[in-house]
Image 1 (cartoon, rainbow, N blue to C red):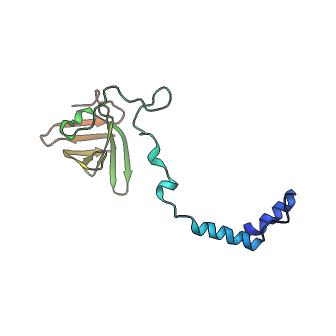
Image 2 (cartoon, rainbow, N blue to C red; image 1 turned 135 degrees about the horizontal axis):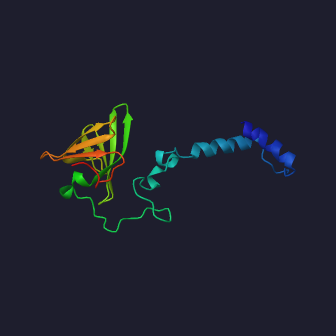
Length: 161
């Protein structure tokens, strides 16, 4: 309502008002009709985060993610905990979360609640883990008792066996 009242006043001040300017009531009706016809906003309309790059990929010279030359597709059958790197630790109301990255396949994983989840949010079979926030470490264990300890900031080659 205030827009419809201010519009004619602003037009008359700028000297661009004409005799064909719509009445304030007509302008208010047009604004109400356009807002009623507008579709409701979705999360993707408000936040377009899905279109941003993967934050765990290294930047190339031009500011875009440079794909490794020997990138393999993630295969659950050939998955190994020894190629993972610990990229981040987080805490929320439900507990701790660790962000893991496999440089050989350029795939991100999440350790939450003692389970490792793949990019499709499905548990990786046979892999469990614990997070020690004070030491900034994650200990992963396979079903056949193979153990890997990852420390925040270390690469896969520097990780303890």
